[in-house]
Length: 280
Image 1 (spheres, helix red, strand yellow):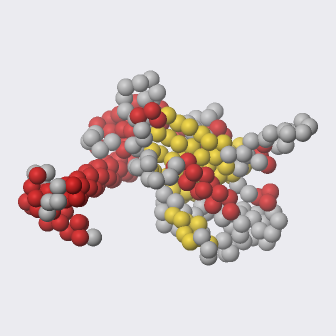
Image 2 (image 1 turned 120 degrees about the horizontal axis):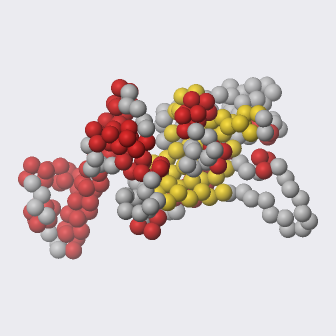
């Protein structure tokens, strides 16, 4: 939040954690029903949802979604923040367009949850933050914010209050590795945390020494869980790569699956697993 959102850039991290995260973040498990739990005056309803559901558009599940507060003009303003992890930077479409779509859905889904009737003044600003673990080389160790709506005077010169149109933005966090002066702050923190090469003890040492994050039993178990997740993702990626290699050899060389696996020196104990996957 401090590194990516302009609302928090001047706040201390501990202050943000203690004061401005509202409630418990929901992680890919709570659905939105736009037609329920609406207050009569259109005031906000607490509890961020991780799914948006409409009859025509189906359901979207967000990785993480939560409310956050920020002091603004001597009053508290609520934001809705979505965080997504993206392992594939080229999924067949520009990721930032998906981020903009998520922002749009979070705005639309507020009707019946945050406001009703014509109480548009209760619309919350939304952010969609994307953590890209495997970006192309030119994007490594970068953080880019895409501000969607800006004021532009075509005729005349007027100034609208920014809070009335500055309602959503997408942020791309593209991770890299040690090797340039940008490898610091949130970029280093996330790279260390998501690394499949570093052991839990090494991660905990870096988090304590470099980021002054005190290791509690709960945090230690969470670091271990992230380590297991990172290794699982890496292993799944390797398995998919081997499967593609088998299929390519079968097609280009007109080999059987057994011949392709033998050429790739896949252990006999694992060949049955790949053979079963080829049938799916």
